[in-house]
Image (cartoon, one colour):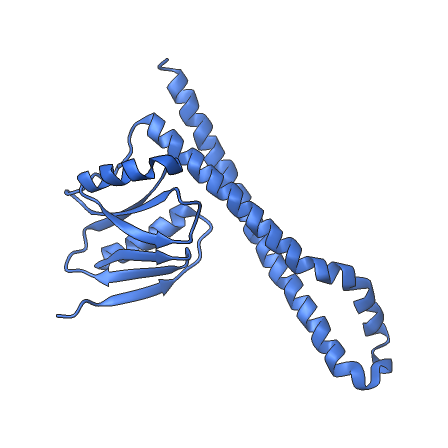
Length: 208
């Protein structure tokens, strides 16, 4: 019987929401087999629904060692491309055959949250740059746009191309607002992750 594959297109700011989506698909009997560009999720239909997926983040230099540990621990490593800084692992396992708590020690958890924090910081920089790139043309043209709208009847045959230009710049600004909202959301996630880092550091200091 030919394998059945489906591809879902999703965009997540939060790693927790990304995992929630993937694991809901796992519960329906679909195993994650590939992630491309951070938005294309390819799943394979399997004959079980006790599968689960975790995302492990660590220092880039330790990815190879962690991959080996994951394989020994009963996980399959899910291929993924162009979706981060090269320091994430998508791991697919089955309950009872792989430990759902892949990293349980505080040192490993601290490395995870530090890596996630760096990921959110990088994402925030990208979204803010996109916001600026989209809104800058509108901002520098705003006074001229107002002037044109106030004297719209004087444009004559230039009405259509001028209107198209104004609409294009305005749509760019609207897209910029969406990027700004994403930036704010990512900053919130960064702050929450930073708090988790501090909590782990505090817990570790109690046992020193």
